[in-house]
Image (cartoon, rainbow, N blue to C red; front, side, top):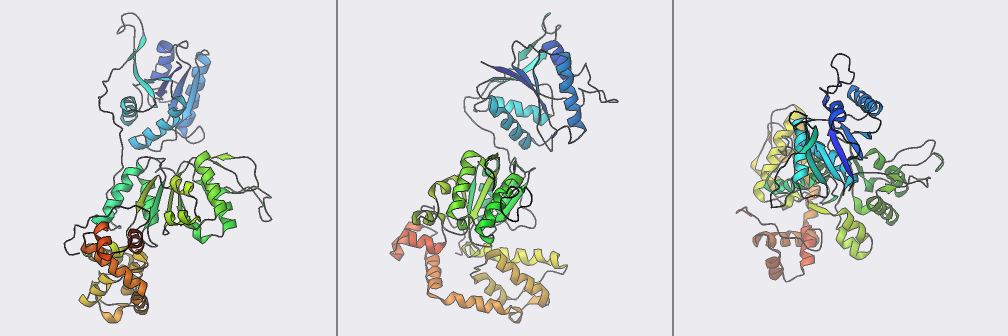
Length: 489
């Protein structure tokens, strides 16, 4: 079985402080001089936290060290890997980068020199050694002649593995931003998002009405993921014509069409290593669905005007207000693409689906929060206005509510009265008297009355589950009911 040695460069000990030259008494040089056996190891994988020799001084010194090892120890194969770690104390990022590099050596014996690197770097080796993964990682330490009874060698560090298999999920601080409302209903969604964010490559499909905060949730997933130091790129697929959307996503080569005057990278290339948020994915054409499926399955795409595929590594988070499952059954959306995008699904509730107490908290939160934006004292709502806002249907969700509050801060005095309500509020309310709205409201009330139990709602209404889900705005064929713990509802 092939065997490699892996270690971190010791930035503070591998180099002479004053000159920056390689320290021959440093741990990496000393390792090759004393412990490394070229007949045992195929190569030494030398890891640098820098992005490369052109990135910073540490990258340049790493290149100098690797070259000096090759010169003084020509029989030793040394491969330098620049890991591009932004924060050498960020355990989550380190672990993700290391796992990505070591995947190439699945099936090899991987000896890790445990003595170099920051504490999070060394802890990474311990956890990868203990986890039930496909990597055969051994922790080793150099033992000199005195300690080794006359023979210098590597000696394994033995750590007993628990008989219970496990994997470590590391999550960044998920405390809600002070500018973001986080009641119990929304907190449950964000708790789920935090768990899936730790898996840096899992694709996610967010379903929810327009204005419910899908892009905010997608950005949260990116910020909590191992990719958080890379780029988050967002695009609304419904806002760009089909022919332009393809070139926007995949880029194009010079001369591909009349106005293509130079090679232009697309969003997939720009988002390499990071997260690409595809909003309103349900609006893309069948042709683009096929192209997107190829990117997901092959990890590559063709810029327009090119016959050469380009490799890409991005996490795709998609979102839609449409019922993609229904579109799949109708044949307007590819089912294989749906399952590729929906590795893990999240559903964002509309404002009208929050329990009454949470709707009131939400209104008061934004009323207070927007005071900072307008640099004014927080407004108060008269009881009549508060009731109107509390029972309003909010077809535009958070965006619509924020529009009303902005109107209040521009036109109202200290207390918002009925006369301060915007004219378009009355026009929007008129839509509440349609037959469809009445059906939705009645089904919602029965659903709440049964404690959000779909089976009981179906029994009382004597109608199909899919009809109930449609009016409740529940995407997918099977969705578990959410228990309601608000006694007022």
